[in-house]
Image (tube, rainbow, N blue to C red):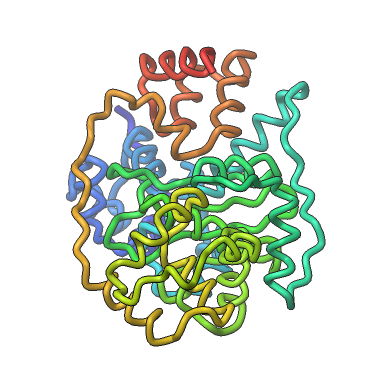
Length: 381
């Protein structure tokens, strides 16, 4: 097969440095001989178009990116939102950086498909004005905007947010390009956009996912900016993170809910607090810690008891769930990308705006047989 000359091999080196891998790591990942990569990097040879395509796909770049002369212009390569997130946490791992870029591209796919499907109405993102200096009042207004009922779980919270024009992605529990690994400290991030913002939530316990979702929504609504958060941000009592925490807690557990809790029935043993709060936790789809924090902020719980509970929780060992069967693989795109995204891809496929192969690539590389199962699943909803 005819080889082509790589005009700018330094761009491969730049991508390797950004991903924190060596040229040999790249060769092993894409199935190209290390000697071939070495020759290219030393300006001593070329590679086939198919080999270059593999490298481009690995780094999530276009083939032309590696053929263009000149140094990489990061301001042109990365969006302002991407730069906001990486400036906020310069220590972000290459996996998280790649995920951020992937999410941005997935949103672009969604908007492009909607533009081609003129008859499809997307929920419009028209956020209400919220007082940024008063997170509790902002939470009350946002709860009305979301039209939340008295009982919720993560799925109902997610649907309410999606109905207001926000894409909500949840990282996959399985290893792959849509996973936030368990050892990664990042719990979620938000990408602000005036027409179609995105919230990404790490797959966790459902009650933790709900708080992450509303914390990130707080950044979008209160601060109108992108943000990326770890556990330290969720524990923060300062600045924008404090406001987002107050917003999330007050939205999930408003004052009217707190009045249902009888302080006289609260056990003194912190190990029994979760049991005491179980009916409320299950009805509201939140953790015991969120409720206790709201009681603390309302001056109904002593600091000492709250911190004792947190210490007790930190010392407990929770069994890791076993890797489950993937017999429902066809439903995973809905869990990861949400209902609006999946419905839009299927509508585009049905209208012959995209091929089966394209639809598969948009839906986490779903196999064609599973894609047909997904269509049947949605037909039955």
